[in-house]
Image (cartoon, rainbow, N blue to C red):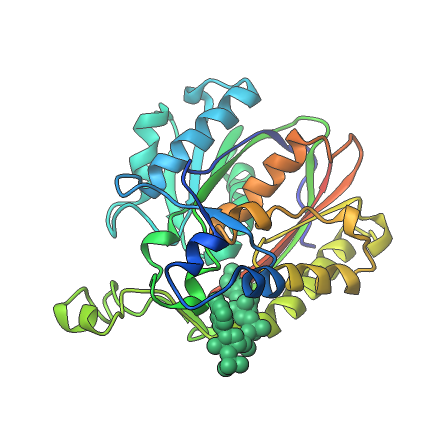
Length: 330
Ligand code: UT7
């Protein structure tokens, strides 16, 4: 059974986005696009872009310290830090290792995971599992991405979609309420070419010849990703609901990965959910990759969209392909 044990709770969240706003109108001056195309095809109106000096860990630190404060937890209490990112500060070491001393998590085991936009869901599932098997009392997961530095700003098919940001979630054992109930996750590597950054790894190292061909930038077959995204999220939510012995009509709030309003609306329609039961903030931030779910959860809490006892569903898909869903009982 893909069910979480009783009593693992979300006790704090935090999020951070850079100050710099790039609107669709700004993009009209950079590539052959229009506000009308971006808004109708994606729902995005603006996105936040990091400064040249800001890395994934800088955004993560801000989100993480807010989450700790909100949870009322001392940094030294955290036993585990998992960072989900596709834009790490360095190839080596992990971004989690960069964050650990700066946040003061001196007792935490720290590592990164690579699951693209499903990263925060994967991190939550892994954190739960490690809390159980290693007897950890407190864990933090952070989704952070600065994909603006991996986007080709002359490619209109991708540069309009992404934004930068970070979101953090603190988990604690043996607390009542805000519980993780069940989950579903999966991967299908046959879709590995649909969305990737070809250079920068051991296949195509950073060499002048690769850079000349723009291979250091994100490439995407948007149509293929789109087609899989709706199916993956819908079926994953159904499987996770099933594990929790819940039905579609039990959902009080769906918090999906913020990729494209058309994808979100299709999934909501399949789940027979009215628009007021879907959390949407992609108009302000675009697709913030691994940060998308924790930012949206944090905003939903801050905006009072979640009440005690609500069934909240997190669901995401991403490069790999990867997908995952988590049912929360608030
Ligand atoms: O976290 C996972 C990340 N990835 C995703 O979520 C991506 C999922 N896919 C999508 O969201 C959509 O496929 C896109 C938004 C990327 C594209 O929307 P679409 O409706 O599938 O458009 P398309 O790729 O079929 O392009 C339609 C037209 C093309 O022109 P022609 O060939 O019909 O003349 C494109 O060249 O739109 C053109 N186009 C643009 N036009 C203005 C593509 N990008 C732009 C643009 N501005 N930014």
